[in-house]
Image 1 (cartoon, each protein chain N blue to C red):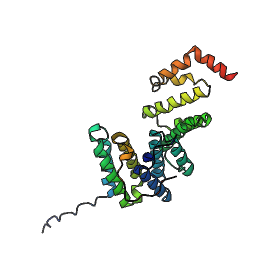
Image 2 (image 1 turned 45 degrees about the vertical axis):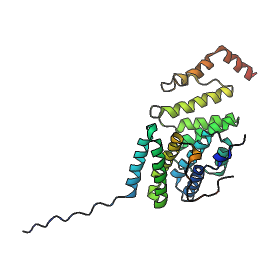
Image 3 (image 1 turned 90 degrees about the horizontal axis):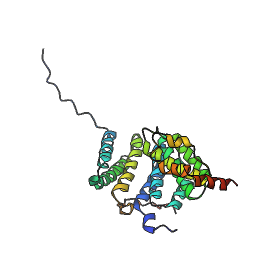
Image 4 (image 1 turned 30 degrees about the horizontal axis):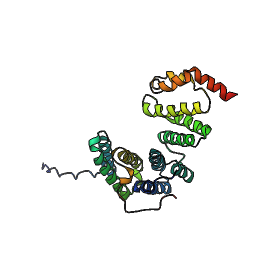
Amino acid sequence: MEVDAASPKPPPETVPETEIYFRLLILHHLLTSPSTYSDAIDLANETVQKIQSLNRRSLDPIAARVWFALERAYELGGELSDARPYAHWPPHLS
Amino acid sequence: MASPPFLVDAPLFSLFLAAQRTASLRHDDETQASLINRLLRSYLHYSLYDQADKLISKTNFPASAPNSQYARYHYFLGRIKAVQLDYTAAHTNLQQAIRRAPAPKLAPGFYQAVHKLFVVVELLMGDIPDRSLFRHPVLEKALRGYFDIVKGDAFSLLCGFHSR
């Protein structure tokens, strides 16, 4: 009987939720020590941009927590006035 | 008191506001609730009470938000009302915050922060806070100073003055 060579299984597709979840975990880890606060701010900004570009409803619950981490990162690591500008500038409530 | 212009225009506020509006359009209740709370927390961090008040009047806090978000929302409302001297409303909101809060052992920091404000509001209303609060294991140390005020003879005299 011939033995078929095991065909390499295609790697399982990663779901974006997993990547965002890992980012969230790392974010919270970075928020535990003052030396990494600025890294936390960068990662948080990047993650928010990613979430907004992916625009998936299944990411909504995680997005809620990423917003929390973003705000916390700015609170701990920098002044709100230092925040980097984003592509869209909607008018704020006046 | 006018708020410094650079804080009002801070890009982070714009980002939060835009995302909050998007979440509201998509009926993403949890994200919307989280963002309203993020905005309130940021505003209160810089004592921007007028901005916070405007946000509350212009947004609907989603009814299906989880308790954790409600607890925060009621706490922020309590703080704003207290600063606006509306102690009755502050008291009601803080009671809601306590009701919706996670178990004291799990989140002692929040429980203590809400109760500190709660006790202060009750004192400002001329009421004597329930003494059992001060014996609560999680609250005992945090409320120590307030208990000293409540115990004092001068305070009971003051309360008598209020009720006349």
